[in-house]
Structure formats: C-alpha cells, structure tokens
Image (cartoon, rainbow, N blue to C red):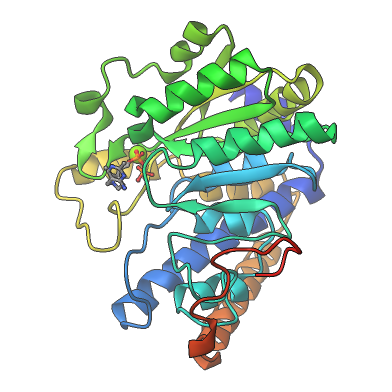
Length: 333
Ligand SMILES: Cc1ncc(C[n+]2csc(CCOP(=O)(O)OP(=O)(O)O)c2C)c(N)n1
Ligand SMILES: [Mg+2]
C-alpha cells in the first residue's frame, strides 16, 4: 500500500489513465479473441494474457523507439501494450492478410517491425538468442537501446536462458530478462518443476542484479521498471526480473485448468490490476465513475470494430506463400 501511495503522487493522472486504458484494451481484446475462437473464426492455438496485463503495460511504458522486445507465444498483450492497433492483431488471429504478420503468423507469432517487436516464439526458450542478439546490435550500433526479453517460469529451467544470461553478463549486453511467473507451465505448477523458485536469485550466478516484483501491481511494476530500465540503459549490464503474476484462464483456450482450485484463481483475481487501478483513480477523484464507464464503452466498441475488420479482411493470396521467408541482399522479401 505504501508503494501505491508513493506512485499515486509521482505519476500524473494522464499517465495512469493511459496505462489503465492499455490494460483494458488487452483485456477486451483477449476476451473477444476467446469468443471468436469458440465461433471457430480463429484456428490453431490461442494463449491469452488475461491477468498478466500489469507486467507488460507497466514495463513497456519505458520502451524507447530504438529498444526491442521479444517474447513467447503468449504475445498479444505485449504487442498491444507497444501500440499495435487491435485491428492488426485481431486480423492476425483470424489469419487475414491485414494482420501484423500478414496472416501467416497467427496467435503465437505476432511481429511488428514498426515497434521493434521481434516476435512471439513458440519454442520455450527460443526467444533468448534473438533478444540478446538485439542487445548486442545495440552496443555495436551505439544507439543506447535496451532489449526486453520476456519469458515464462517454464523457461527458467531451459538451458538457453542460462547460456544467454552468461553471454549477456560476459559481454555487457543491455538485456532485461523478465520472467512472467504465472505459477504454471501448461498444467504443471512451477513448484513441481523448478528446484529453486526464487528466480531473481539465479542472477547472482552470473554476477548481475536480480529483482522480484509484484506483477499484479501496476504502480510497482511501472515505478521499479522505470528505475531498472534507466540503470540498464546507462550501465549496459543485463538484469533478471522475477514478476509474480497469474493467468486467469488455462494455458491455452483448450485447457480447462482442472489442475488448480477455484479458490486459488479467485485469490489472484482479488488483486486484479485493472480493478485496483480503476478503483484508485475513482476513489481519489482523478476520474469519475461516468468517465470510467465511458472509457470501458469506447474500448469495447474499438475491439468490436477490430473483430469486424478481421472478419471482413481477405485471406493472404496464394502467391504470398513463398514471400517473407528469406530476404535478398537488397532487403527485399
Ligand atoms: C522446447 C519446448 N518444450 C516444450 C514445449 C511445449 N510447451 C509449450 S508452452 C509450455 C509451457 C511453458 O510455460 P511457461 O514458460 O511458464 O509460459 P506460460 O505459458 O506460462 O506463459 C510447454 C512445455 C515447447 N513449446 N517448447
Ligand atoms: Mg508459466
């Protein structure tokens, strides 16, 4: 509560409303995507970010244009936090040519050159090499960028994380490793899969800093990540962040989540970042109930517009099948 009060005074109302709006966009987008999946408008896998919004929104508020971001297949939320238009994201889910990967990536492989979003990756731990590569490029180009590398708790026991932490520490790479610990890797509780669940403590093995943050608390994430990003930008030393969070739904839409109790899910929902922040804004009279309702209504309408856009968009033409596979020496795809 202390940090909340401190943050309330240091962040402007406009900023807080902007962050709340981003979380609402993600929540509504994901809810609409579940519905569209059930209507069979989306094929393949679909992993939602519902419950984890404060991590992505609070962290990426500190991203500068030259910074890069990479993550797992649970990638819709971070893309939207970066400013990807919901239409572009929804069309990608629908496999339409107007999507951010021209309908060829789908749910797990969002991509946005404009936002330096270097992908959702399907292989657990597959994104680390790309992330530290981007950090290496920044040192080479001297553009003062940092590389945000998001991953799940399940990836903390993958060798690629440890190889990447080692290289990043050895070569002074400005890489920000962010573990979104949502307590489960598919249906396995992290306590059953990870010998040492104090993720931040693993930083010590590589001579770098580690921090544990409450990923359900937008104020804490936003404030602490602001300091951490600033430090990494200046020192060029990597850092390992442990974000404690929770996914409200199953691993993917086809997972009913029978391995956890309703009481457990409800105890996390009681800390819901959207409800907490909206309540704080309303109680402190920074926004009125009516303004909040109007904001919710506007976002719902925007997301419905995105669904309609995706529905009406054409599929990728057949002659695109072999495009965007390799680039030639001139950069043509
Ligand atoms: C190398 C590899 N092994 C196994 C899988 C299958 N798999 C997909 S997601 C997943 C769980 C990952 O959990 P976590 O890293 O905690 O991410 P979360 O889904 O919770 O965001 C597994 C084992 C995979 N995609 N890649
Ligand atoms: Mg997990």
